[in-house]
Image (cartoon, rainbow, N blue to C red; front, top):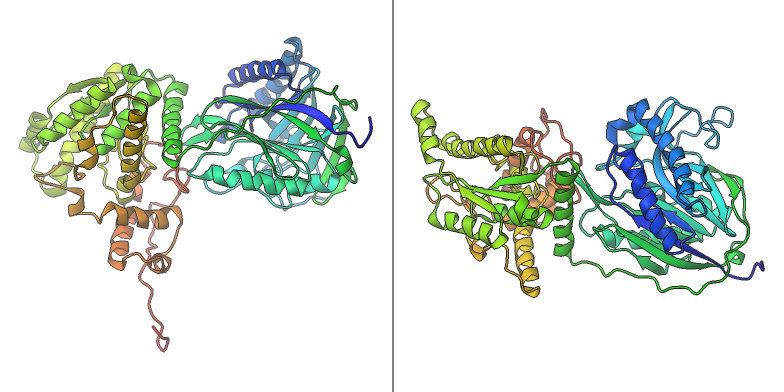
Length: 611
């Protein structure tokens, strides 16, 4: 083979939806999608991060029984692939490993050569976020993730020990380096080591959760790492929901010069296949041994290039609009939560308002109308239009719907105990919550909470009332976005010649909890435009009082909103999980102490300083 001739390689990325803890099911998934890759003529297929265990496995990582089962599943998978006639296909798959070590440690804690455990000779002990290349029935190499994210929803420094070696495998004359997820986000990390060592291709299994506009960050990131590695990069991301997280896929292939070669659609399982033509002569030197902070090891599977073949055109998926992207994230997050937990159906309270109408539409899109049950629960303060709008919403969606008046039950409570003001108002919400939980128990439905992020932020959801439920689909959706999504979903239906699922009156009428005569949200809250802007800066961006004022927020509004947000922490700690779509979601993403005396205050001008 002339060094000047380009070397061809057909590669696939299997963007699949795994289940945490389902080693057997995830192994079956790998075999099925590897067969599709082989049928497509691929020489290499890459699966997402921790494919065999699902991601994130959280404290399952700490169980040696689970880690041992993961290691065995990996070995069994290699043998199974060969037995299925897939032994010639190189398969990169993520899993949980245990090796010598005392537990998680910072990546900068570099041990001496004498006491560093060898990645090539693993011994049981410390947990590792690992990827392996399987070929010919064997585990050819194992790679241990170098950079362990410990921010936002990630707790990897709690669980894993960082790797110190970068394995490079020669496959059909192409040098392939293995990395995992966060390794790609770090400048000067394994991609930089790969660039210094000399490789042709970097594969990157990922479990990168969705948040709004994150797909706009990924391509520039992968392009920067391709330039740093001086190699093509395969970025394979998982898809599907896992508790509060949803993964959007968005897998891609990028050339050494940063050209986008292929990109997968979001929120669906997909096999993305691309034909690479790589120039080995562009790599001036191929090194092994110590390179920067890592040790490069080289392994040869096959020197001979594959016979020349006619390259097929690759596909580049069109990006989704912002509202469609969010909608599909919420639908997938809800669907996978229900289906992966084996729940047959859902129930929710229908008030005629925009929040319950939107949640009902999401549920029907996720599960089908026959698996969604709506219940109208009118009190003596419920307006006629609320009842009519709730019924209209259910009819448009084709879902089950019934009405249970709660006024007699509320009257029975009020005749037994004297309640007034907010306590009396919230009693109605708690009666509704009790009835809905009763229906959930009776029929096996999961109760959906319908509170949005704006309400959750300021505590405007009643504990054990409308906050009751096992999953909160719009918990991370601010009220202003609720309206945007409703209008988008109706427009989407019109474009397809379908019935608009959300009543226009539910969108246009002033929002109200209807817990008192003539009550509206604007009686006790600033406008939702103002409220959501402050919440985005205070909650999502962690800005303090001075920074909030510098951004132009009204001082009185800020002070009022911050008091409400801070006082509601105990409520949020008890709230149901809901799909994360923002920079910082309530739950595992934003964690503040309930018992907390710190409060943001207006900045003071020091004596003698100019105002």
